[in-house]
Image 1: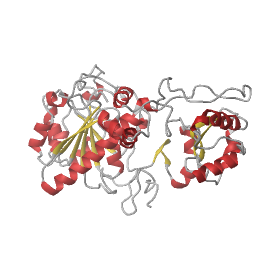
Image 2: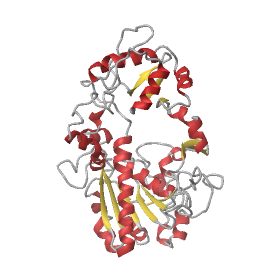
Image 3: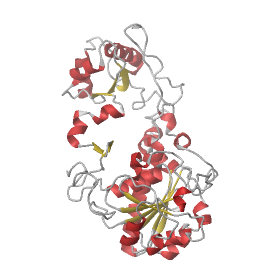
Image 4: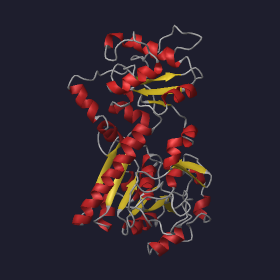
Length: 426
């Protein structure tokens, strides 16, 4: 199924921004922001799209070194001050040659800056205009600031998973590991909202609308709200809830840590094991290898789940994570080590697939998914703001991108950072 996504020695392939990949030839304008918008543009770039990032004169509010900003790989950058008299016109020149546009401002900001959907679609009627926000373009919260943790909280996603209340150890074998339905929800960084509910839904929307635009010549606006995408991710659980198969509280259900055979347990050395032995045949293998004993509670005797959880926890607490990895190696018991990001880099399975690659000293995930005929690739390192203006002007036939004030060494690059009211909220 294709390769790891690193071709021709890494990112040093064709000079053009969109050579190779299933989206080769698709042109994308990204109005610089933070979070899910840049990640969506990176995904399009990984799949071969020619992504031009329109950076602001001031530095990113994240303060990350450009060489380490993986979300800006497979892109080229030009600096444009949208508040300058000629700024909106220069962006509209790009829009006229683009297929897709991504912006992540609060509702109304792009319009005030002169690059909203109406003016962009007037310039290019086939354009797909993607809007990435947390709350969406309308609704009582639309104008409010926010972040992943708030969007997933309101969408009913954050409250799904409960933490472990107490943990048994060799020093305290009487302690019982259990979920705490009344405890605070567990956090999954900003993956479920920003990137799963935001970026991925934006990309799906952009590509669906691009298909329509190429068939009809008519572009449109894609309103990708993190609250909408995060809520959409719960579709199966909503069905279970409606059918009485899911309780509307965390830590008491089959997949939220409530079941003792679908949970995380600590080992003797502080490492953790993830158990997902749901099906009877997998659970039987799990119970055999863990040596739960013939008197252990039955898998589906829910009244005795606390007892079963305590027994499983005590067994795991008796040996190190490495010991248990060896016990379960090659089995269908569905037990895996919980790895840190750096540990995942060295995992044998991921290494064999090239899931993580190192480019210019930065370890990062390879493009995904994989394509048998048109694999994505890491063609370019993270773009430095303004570094590609001349190249973009040549490839897109846009001499208007090259006024004296632009580029990484021009006056715009030396503008001090100032508060930006147009900063994205997602």
